[in-house]
Length: 307
Image (cartoon, rainbow, N blue to C red):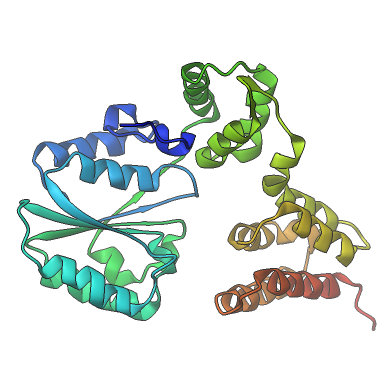
């Protein structure tokens, strides 16, 4: 079989011994693999840290049939009724059936409520593995029916060693400073690191184009601009446009976490603004306009109050 052309797929771990980090979780999961049965799981943690890899690895090492659904694309109750319930209710030649719901935090509340009943109804034959970045978006009744495991990113040193092995396997020559730059810029997102390496591979030599790092650095640039006494809205818009980013969930989180840095004393007002705009972003086609509106309001509350 021809190797996958994408590094992120070619080097996706197929067995637990090849999976980087989370040693305690690996030990626990190996026990389940040995007995060819698993619990219902929720894997949560930052993007690009191996949640999907772990889910796929499990089903590939079990005697089971499985259904994979990317819940960011199929997030409604129809998916649960038409696909998940149908799969769970059909006969199988394998002793176990597993449903992987990737990015389950995108599922609507109605879909999650429906899933709760499906898990109970087919508990004898079917197991569920959900992955998500934000565990707080998964309703409590689902969490209570699953083992919730936090996927902790491996250390920067572990990641660098892992990437070094891949670079040698691919016969790509590189300067250590470039590898350190990639790790520091994209950590903990190993997926982004591998994509950056593939994009920067010039005939067997790693030549880093600074522009490929912009997308990850844009959040720091926005915080830096917001810290200024006279924040320039045009500059913020330009930073976002140059980044090419279309999903701003990470930015909302950082704006909330670092509100004390750029809006000291107005953190409550920032939280209200972010809550409103993050909610409405789910219903906006152009999310860039939505985040721009949030930033404009933050700039306004930063201005000295006229008494």
